[in-house]
Image (cartoon, rainbow, N blue to C red):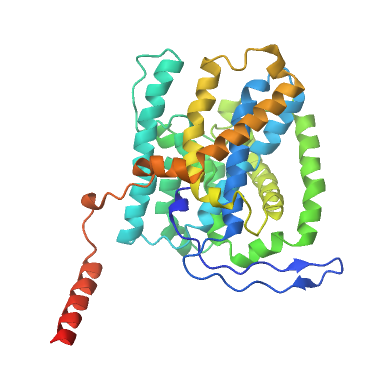
Length: 382
């Protein structure tokens, strides 16, 4: 997401298997520095479409076991997929001045702006004029910006820890045992942490592995099984375990459920993330360019999702029938697609990706290099 402002690293395109299991085509040459990888842009776009669709389905769940099952299945992997990819592109974060600047301008500033905007918007839609703006209590979608800010700051630590994933899982499991303070939505930050760490540990060959033809074929029955299991689970368990925002006690479960469900949901989500990535196209498509604007689609579509209830869009009876679900799904997909387009990005870049050079000191090393360049140029001319 905010990593959209970073250039994708060079990566070789994966080989494609033939039916015999041998390589059907050679891996494409490595991409030149600065060239974006279509696969990751495609993955981010498709993931943000699923996020928007999930929000659009939320008011349709009451009285519909099918919608609830699809909702649970989608929520099991769409945010984990985003977070894994965010972790993958955070591997090079080293707290250098340039990266810290991008962290502030790409995450902290949008967080402050949209936290304020969502609070003011909610005052109107929820008829709560006394709701205060609180930068410590992320509202609606802004929790992800706060969480990613924290995760990325801790990247150097995870790069040094001997067993980063087990440690992250233990932290997530312990978080479910008690009611963590709501400041910065810390419960979700801790419970989603293992997915970010997984992204830090991934290498290009791991993505090539899940993009093989055999993985794509296997993903079909796995997804089908996930929907069937979700349909079975709807009346038997709460899908809130996949939201990772509550402790076991807050969900009305014994304390020991928390660590167990952390491992269960982590395993299920990773399998579904792998299946999702297996079906992401690796070549450029009409929507590839939209992958650079997923942060815009993510933050802006929330106003429509919140306002739709206030405006009564879900009140007509036909909306809760199968045809209504199809219409709502298509509308959500079209809306978030439009919000990821270059014109929208140009319109909101001042707040999503502000330059803010005035707010930062110049890097001493960069200044030294510039002075040396000037001296060398003067010496040549002399």
